[in-house]
Image (cartoon, rainbow, N blue to C red):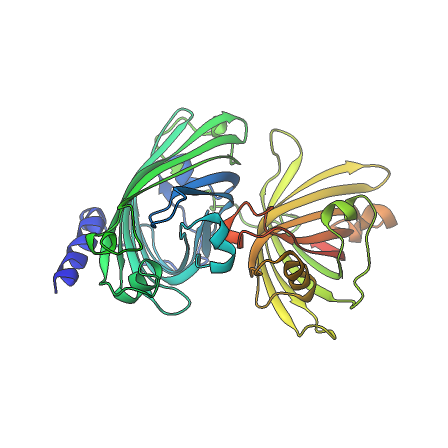
Length: 460
């Protein structure tokens, strides 16, 4: 009863700003996909894209020799009328209006343990649940009910404030994490000691500084306090955990922002024109290779003796036509991949979310160089990947970093046909890896898999 009372009061405390602000609003929800203009207090809130990389440092609360652990994290930001991706969290809108959202939601849950234990444990993961989110000017509050893959339940309530001035963006936040007894027993008692549910308190600040054009520095500092029942466990040594992040990223140029105190939703676009080419569909087919990325790029590729193959379909929507004032186009590009069965593996699926850059140049016809960065998740580990992990002594990870390198040529230029001016034909490398053991998010592994593919890409 004591825990339930604390839980209810904690949730009320953090969603109070939404109750106060919402009392004067009674808008009807929009149908998803219906054009709407959202007004924000900062450019950061209005932006619909970003790509970043940095290092996270987290304190280890357990009674071990190591004090902290570091991770390299790639971060994607994307938002439209249907869903959003914001770093290590994402959601799909079930219902929303100008100030309120109900989302199918996922967030990455970090478990800070010594580096040498992370590959075998792989206890941190993206968990899924339901989120309510409130936005009013610079204020934002949300509540989510979550569970891990074994239905150990937990949740959080969070409030943050967005502040922006000149080249600086700051966002202080406070968060309460309320956890069930079975969640605490597994992740803190390590299934050796019984404990109760409780509430963990976190607070901190995230920051961003505009350096030049599309380049920004990113930072975060936070502190968390574990509940007393957890600290009394023999497995736990520290009640307070400090977390920090430092990195860099590419976002819309804040130097181009309007001299105003409000910013329109950057998803509000003009009607789609018949001759526009800001979206694409790419269909590819590829063959596995045991060669690493360096060998492929130096034309020393080996053939997979089992002839494992994949077929993929990617959709792309343009984010910007320039980067650093150069003609470099960026696209948000999710994809579905089907790995075909062979004598050493069954059929399996792969999902990809990435941001891809294209640079166009002319040597006779138009050519494009492309590179993508993102996340890849497979339903089962492929044979080409699993055998390498076994040789290196790693436990495979279904979630890995995703890279794509491509070169294509415009078919309209090649065949001198205006009907094919939006069609490109090319070669790409489909790459999954764990960033050289530098990220626990990817199982703290080195290596991965590579497929060489041929594709057709149609812009519309």
